[in-house]
Image (cartoon, rainbow, N blue to C red; front, side, top):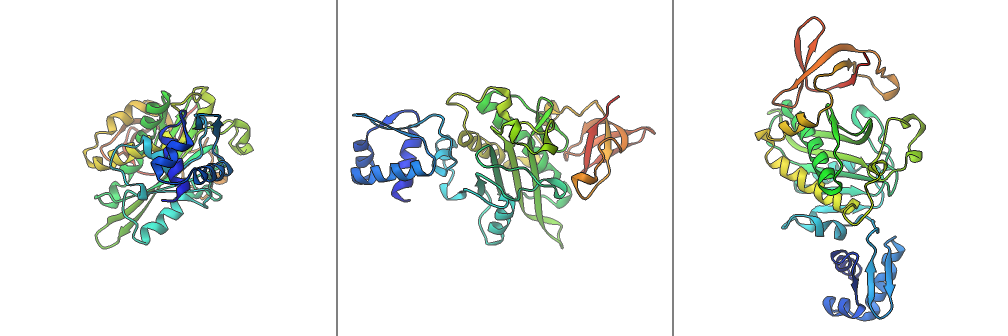
Length: 337
């Protein structure tokens, strides 16, 4: 690890507290001049580091540049630092994760970006991914079930997102089937799951799970077409203080996703999913599959009632003729009665 990253690690471990230059130099076995140079480099990267006369350096509590060093102090023990990859800008974290998986990077690897220039959502849509305001993260996972049950990881991921947000910020979110996370009436998180399967066995070789959270995106920063639809945690007014930061939320999200993935086939998360759903018991429209957002018409579709979530994460619906069917993919909207 470079001198600069070692200095950052020490500052992150003592975030909000002052650490003397002498202490940093002794701890890292480097010169005071090397500490000073590292501090200047980190400031250039956007870190808010205050120099306090006769006391030392302090990484400000509200400094929230994404980094491995900022994430690690909040993770559960024994998570390997070399499994976390943080980038300033990527076309898509899912695309990079898929390339890494093909190159043999092990399951459990996490790809994070401050910005996505070509972020993607479900059904080929774009995902608005501006710098600084969001969390854009992809996991390389290797579940042990066939493709028919792949909706399980998507369902589980939405629960992991809700639990992570609640544990870090105290904010309770709800889920719209399959995997959209809402705060109030606005969507704050989208999830895109992509799988590569063995065609002979039907077994999934690996899954790339992409999660995009609007963390502190101002409403004015969303494109016009998303106005009134997309929201962010910022709107809750509860993101101030040391407890809430993107690095800490990412750490909690990593813990939650990997924990749920390990016990995926037990389906233990489904009860939590149902309790957070705002679809069950509602009248809905099943929206026909369309090639793009512009081709969808959320006021047209097949009327039905949302009845239950089955053991594989599918939505059980009752059609107007009284017949019951299960949706394992697709899209729905809440009917206005």
